[in-house]
Image (cartoon, rainbow, N blue to C red; front, top):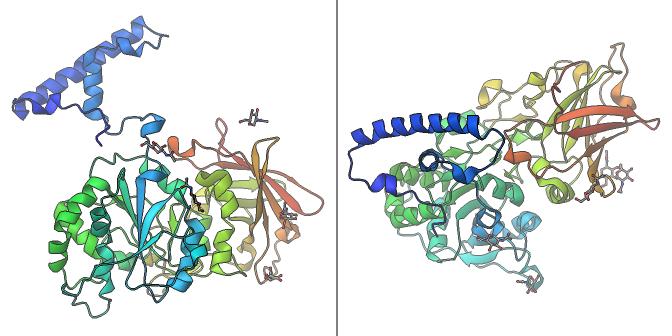
Length: 488
Ligand SMILES: *[C@@H]1O[C@H](CO)[C@@H](O)[C@H](O)[C@H]1NC(C)=O
Ligand SMILES: *[C@@H]1O[C@H](CO)[C@@H](O)[C@H](O)[C@H]1NC(C)=O
Ligand SMILES: *[C@@H]1O[C@H](CO)[C@@H](O)[C@H](O)[C@H]1NC(C)=O
Ligand SMILES: *[C@@H]1O[C@H](CO)[C@@H](O)[C@H](O)[C@H]1NC(C)=O
Ligand SMILES: *[C@@H]1O[C@H](CO)[C@@H](O)[C@H](O)[C@H]1NC(C)=O
């Protein structure tokens, strides 16, 4: 199991820590000297193996996540999903799971309260179904919640007890959670699964985080627990749960035990709990510069694409995910100089065109197209900056949603096309400037970037190429060129 080179020498020494500290300083000083001398002597050589021993010692002391060869990198086979579901909603919710589940590739279990009917033709389309063990002996004293929270929080322990092999991460989710698998894998690759990690995100509603905790990974957005931590949790979870009968649900019960174990939340902002009402357009059109990992509350929020069901809407992501999963929902901002328009692309999802010039710092804030969990539109309701959707009719964006995505094998580029599907046309505007209403379609060209998240986070750049006769605006999206900035 332990595949990392362990540097136990440093820690087994009987020396007191007081002796170790000066030694570390000495080693740092020595390595500095070695590097300096090495630089002077072997200026252009790459003879790494000639580095003195002390340098590798220093590196092992300070390097937490060594670069791993491909075979050791976390992949889809190392993850086991634990999906909390209820028999009552299964008929409807299973359709969400089918959208992201990959037969023969993903591993996991849907944990239900009661048996459900399953067609033989469906067996390969969803995870294995299991019935959670009885929880009637546990106390539940919350008057607002449901005692199924106990059952669902124990999924972690019940999954550990299955004794599956080669598991590095247990990932929890709900039956109304949509995962982008390759992006989840990419995020987990950043962490050493041999250590204790509890990874997820908080709620989009500030008051939820105050009421529950800013240290809690919200369960519907999904969270990942490294396997050794899950094993440790399994040993104490049943005792721990008995100490918190007043808690509301499952994820707060998991967090309470994490607090007892002393393991903090590692925040990854690509998990989306979506504790909001209305349209999440604003959040997805200005996604954080981090891989999109999950979407939740699919029955509660409006369909992610207008004029279709939520399942149909999520199906639209299939092609962009296949072509360039890492790029999905990544924002780029640019200007159409000829027309004096601002353009914001959320790749694979939507393009917005605004009259006039907005700064990048405005455009990177999500527009409040949604209400918080207490159904308020107040800007103070969120744990992040937002902006109003538009301050006047002229500034209302022209929104184009993904129509289709194709891959051009000649140029190795993805071509995504976006069209207007707003139910209502934009309001009239008296500004004396060209009207984006003339644009019928936006065509975006982008090369897939498999290394996007192996570099420091940075938005892609976009460039308005041309406007065709038929009202098509052509845009190029890609890595920013040298000295390229969002400016006019
Ligand atoms: C995942 O990694 C394991 C090594 O831990 C390897 O044997 C397996 O082939 C990999 N699977 C995929 C799908 O890449
Ligand atoms: C993959 O799944 C199919 C069913 O869709 C099954 O018939 C086949 O045996 C599986 N292949 C492997 C390698 O497990
Ligand atoms: C893609 O969508 C655009 C706009 O709806 C349409 O004109 C075009 O024919 C579609 N192309 C393909 C290959 O489906
Ligand atoms: C496209 O990709 C293939 C294989 O990765 C490569 O051989 C080819 O040169 C690329 N073409 C262009 C135009 O970049
Ligand atoms: C909404 O969908 C229906 C059927 O799918 C289609 O006929 C109609 O044109 C769509 N409306 C808009 C505004 O796109």
